[in-house]
Amino acid sequence: MKFETSKITERGQITIPENFRKKYGFMSGDKVLFIEENKGLFLRPARKIDFKELNRILEKTKKIKPRYNLSAGEMDKINEGLFR
Image (cartoon, rainbow, N blue to C red; front, side, top):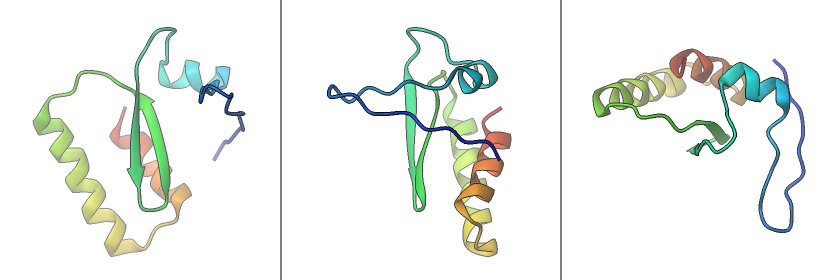
């Protein structure tokens, strides 16, 4: 698992590190989707997604987490796969 840090400015802004911007397709001017989970906050580029796809993602997340007692890092890996 890779991680980096970024400071929050006085105006509440953060810089997404370049390697993550490239890997996940964040572009200048993109909107960012923040997803709150029990163990943390996840973000991804906000792209149009149909509601059937969103429900599928949420149902998989609900089924996986309680059954296996996963760590936040393990959930990150699962979410990476779900949001590709």
